[in-house]
Image (cartoon, rainbow, N blue to C red; front, side):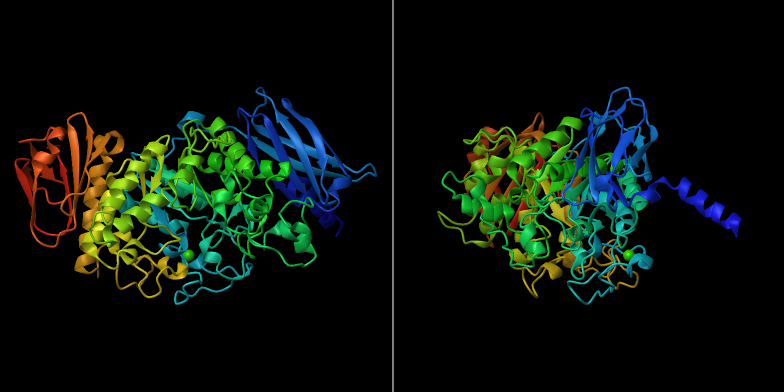
Length: 620
Ligand code: CA
């Protein structure tokens, strides 16, 4: 019996972590430019303890008490001479109680310059992981979490897709011609319902066990990198899920916005979603506060990034993931809802450590002035510097849909695309802005274009030819749609056929696909694989001509390579006089159709037999 007790005591002595409930970040690295690290330590009554560190090159600069007695925030400095290794942080309460936390500083295993961001040479495949492929049915349900069921019949239920499902299908993604993968968030969403979407994070350091493990996420990243592809992580700085662990014991009284009202169970206000208050010269303080301090929805508490401990928490958390997974980029959710000064510090802190990294921020606005405002380098009237490389082209997305859905008149139809692209003069670097036919929050492009296949091909060709970084949502290649309930989130994030054992249709192999679906898959495959090696599309000069007789001609040129995109909305054969385009220097040259491989001579005229897109190249 006594021997057993000795064993028990020895066990606890060995387990340094067992003495402290939580420390975040769970580890750090030596060799960052910023030598400061702030540790969140959570443990009952830890606020009345002091702390000591004894490790060469590491010093404890300041012990910050929180409003809750159960937290300490330790300001640690890690000098350039600090070596990787583990050390003890010893907590004492002055009454003889001692707690020890073993902390690890790892060596960085990739040079900061080698975190290469996404750019206009890439095409990003956006995936809703719960809906893409279920490689591991044994992780579908986790009874320790609040949502305990899986139901593929319920659009808002979990369907079982996981990280391994993405890893298993990287060959398909790569062969289609995509070069980067952006899965929507895969961190724990311990929410009672709709946890599948991932944006209500309840633990910023944990992979949702229904998606898999940290090791599986690391393996996904490593496999992507072995294929010379890129991984983008979807981050949420604005909010968490209401079931987040800190909602039961907030470190500070202003950790989330409207915290007192939440604690007192008083009514809370949601954001007014008036995103222009970030730029509006005349916006009232009330509107600004409602915008940035209102909760996005009642299930998603609004993080208060004006609290400096919260600000540092988010920055360090994101750096921890970049370093752990060797990320290439971040997509930051709901950009204009966070404190904008914080977002500038956040992006600046990341770019300072990773000079070649990429970040794209989501601002859902069809106003190009707002897209321009958020992109770094833009001369903003209020002096705001975003440090953000890329913003999102919701304006052009809308222009493309209008251009195709509208009838051709002087002021409608293709002219929307022509005039939309003219707005590029407002952007610092148009080629670093993200363009997309749709995304996980919008009706699918095939639905937006009313099921019109030639129009869908024209939209996709445009997105892949413009001077932009294109992103395409999974399933676009097989005409996935939401006709049944247009715009319904659960539905438009439908299951990718073939991702589940027993699926009758398999889009990975083509089995069971309709002729139209196969044709679209092949079309996208051809355009994507051409684009992959096309310097003209990736970096070339852009010239376009005003719409003419129901057609629109856009040229991308670099050196000997010219790519011609012709959009034609005429149902009947139409002949266009090519003299209009003489300045492009293509007269009497032989061009190849990128889709069909057919050769044609650029001579006096071209006859377009049917509605649709023609993509031509001077490349042999
Ligand atoms: Ca699964």
